[in-house]
Image (cartoon, rainbow over all chains, first blue to last red):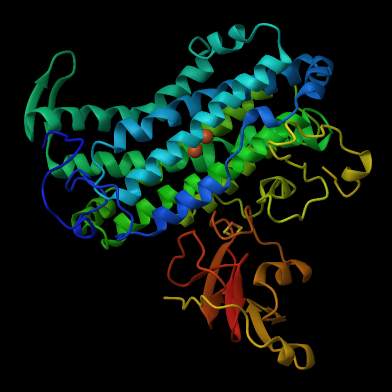
Length: 377
Length: 102
Ligand code: FES
Ligand SMILES: [Fe+2]
Ligand SMILES: [Fe+2]
């Protein structure tokens, strides 16, 4: 029940469920129940990058030349991403580490969350480079209503799970009256349900909520604007594509019953709720696109196109966790985005910006106009 | 379950002289593909758009339905592959197959 940093019991961790079994004791990877999580760790480590490697000097000039409504689009997206990575840089650790039972999964959670701290640091790097007073932008994240609305949606499931696990770890199961919150019933089924919904909401966060912002960043870069930013976003997007696979594995393993038979029942019971988490997030992201473009669109992108893209990507993500697609949209309205989302090891895009080695220190921030010849918005 | 081959591709001498081709049926359409490259690039060359992101087997964006036939992967992809599906970016077609896009 109460968490131990080094569980003294003797047990075979390959027989434990992913969560809510024994607390992990020895961080050993010689025997693994789900080797996929160690593969994710290796891949994530191979992706390692530092924001300082990307030269943003040209972005500063570009930013000053953007029209006011384009600056609004750019900065609002940065604020939203800063919020998302603030949450992701801590929450997997705080929410999942106290309840995880497999060493390989524990280490994946830590590796995953660590990579989010790189994302957070990269936003400070970007903002420092484009404005004189970064605090104006950061301070607005907790004031701006459009952002704080989204903060509620992305943290609600995490916070609920953390609260229930705290109670469970101190009091065990039962019904408790919590000052200011009223009665809370903590049972193993309720804990597992809270966990399942949290993982679904994290999948949505990483697999859908980032993509409006990604599209705008790459939309600017297609016009050879804010290219340093686009290089950073490309690295972030590559990490996020791996993270979403992590939560897809957790959800699919749970639903399959192969990990914990009780979890399969909970997954089946939660199916409609999970569908709604996806659909609600998609609607919120469409509203976000409308907020971004309230004062004007950018070339090649407007609220309607982005809304269709949100629907399209939501369908892809729902199917990846075994749900029926919800939206009628069948085609990607901005197929050019995929050339930016492709892994760096595969050079398919002419506009592929190079990522320098840290030994060189900074990347060449200029691209030839000819690099964009093939592109049409 | 889709069999996953962990070995590298077959005998290349054979391939050069006599490439193995398989028929890929997609609804009313079909095309011939080789075992030399993953399915995705060959679909793209035939003008068929399939969603993709990483093109490296870790994001699951290129998952499509495999209704009939066999594909293999040169190394096991990191993305989850649902029963009856394949990852187009890294699947090597090993028999005539029927597929469906979403
Ligand atoms: S494109 Fe990412 S798994 Fe195929
Ligand atoms: Fe992130
Ligand atoms: Fe992430």
